[in-house]
Amino acid sequence: MAPAPNINPPINVGHIDDVQELRKTKPITVPERYVRDMAQRPTLATSSPCSSSAMSIPVIDLSELVEGGEDEVQREVLKLASSCEEWGFFQVINHGIDKELLESIEKVTTEFFMLPLEEKQKYPMAPGTIQGYGHAFVFSEDQKLDWCNMLALGVEPHCIRNPKLWPTNPPEFRETLETYSTSIRKLCQTLLRFIALSLGLNQDRFNEMFGVTVQAVRMNYYPPCSRPDLVLGLSPHSDGSALTVLQQGAAGSSVGLQILKDNIWVPVQPLENALVINIGDTIEVLTNGKYKSVEHRAVTHKEKDRLSIVTFYAPGYEIELGPLPELVDKNHPCMYRRYNHGEYSRHYVTNKLQGKKTLDFAKIQTQVSTN
Ligand SMILES: COC(=O)C(/C=C/C1=C(C)CCCC1(C)C)=C/O[C@H]1C=C(C)C(=O)O1
Ligand SMILES: O=C(O)CCC(=O)C(=O)O
Ligand SMILES: [Fe+2]
Image 1: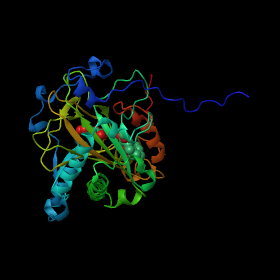
Image 2: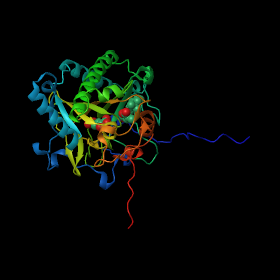
Image 3: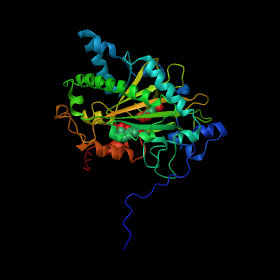
Image 4: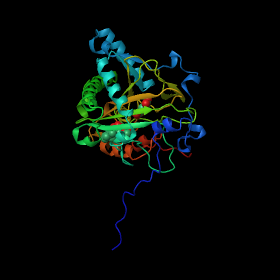
């Protein structure tokens, strides 16, 4: 009998160095697989002409939205609308999440990354999968690699969790992540209410349609790199989520996140106790492109390491998505097709990070006239 066709050929990703170990054992070596082609090499924050406040992402004060009088709410909702429309990114302050909780998650995450390699490898990310400790989005031997170690975990609903990949070392890791994720989830739901209002929609429009929402966390550790001008910490991409919440080290830690605005990579300066929020592909589709999921990447630093703790908040897998009818009309023709979020998640996690290419999955291609 002829062998069954191989539907999922095994992925050969070749040898992948652990960048933290590389940094310890060969501090000035940058293997070829990490060296980017000229066009992809980063412009670094220190030499960037655009670190002035005119080129800083907006700051939203959540307490003004939640507790403010009518005027403050109106002003802040308008600011939220322009942040989402023009930047796709903002920092949120007075978000109501305890400083101690932010510090605790940073502490247990740092402790995890500082463990010996053999200990971290007890939670391995298998090639072609996206949960555990390792390199996600690597599918071939000749793909360039990110200068980053990553721990990614499904959090909600429980059926997407792989408990074997949730570290038991440090001992407080699991409980802290659980408490943190509950707070971040509430924050996402609050933000989605104000984002709906900012679009002139009923405040519960997104929360009601999202069903059993999916939440995942990705912890990124970027060791220093002797040649930050040659490598990327994280390849350019947009997030597949509805909203992403990013916690990065406070003022004084190195600047690593950059977002693409008007073809310029703009660095995001860490703000004490603030969280960085970005619009994901799902909100871009639902708003028919009014709010865009903006391409971003991370760069590394010659002497400083950096940690980011990133939560992806998304609709349930069974939820059908497409532009909301309220946001489609003669002047705003429908730009995206309908699909279900499970399909998009599969598409997202089986493709390498490549700018906004993943969203081509949902775009309706406009005909180019040849006349
Ligand atoms: C490394 O992982 C990611 O970058 C990532 C993955 C998230 C997920 C898990 C770690 C567990 C299973 C669910 C999910 C796919 C969300 C990014 O998440 C983005 C991509 C999609 C799609 C999304 O909703 O968030
Ligand atoms: O580390 C960062 O600043 C970027 C992280 C990020 O974009 C992600 O994990 O999706
Ligand atoms: Fe991202």
